[in-house]
Image 1 (tube, rainbow, N blue to C red):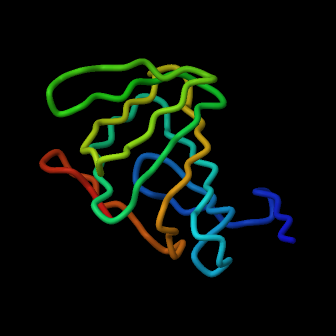
Image 2: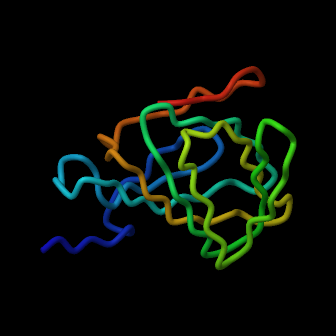
Image 3: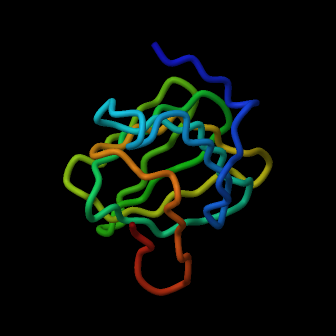
Length: 124
């Protein structure tokens, strides 16, 4: 059995927020669980080419936009899943951080970092 507290782990700054990777590949569970905070007022162009990701919002507000311009609001209790390695733009509300529980398959090593820029989508 594994028991961890996010307060006992170092977070990874991924550019527009911080991710505490609670489970990683080294744990041999077959997936990663992360507590992810997206900083208020940020926009992140993301695409996971080698991982599928599901995010469950536990606090804050934001939105996710697909390449065709479709925008979906993200509020507490909302889950979005990137089941096709989807490119997307994740935005946190201007006034408050967006807090997500993120699950990745296959698992992350825990050392991954985004390379955010205005062009293209950051990936790992």
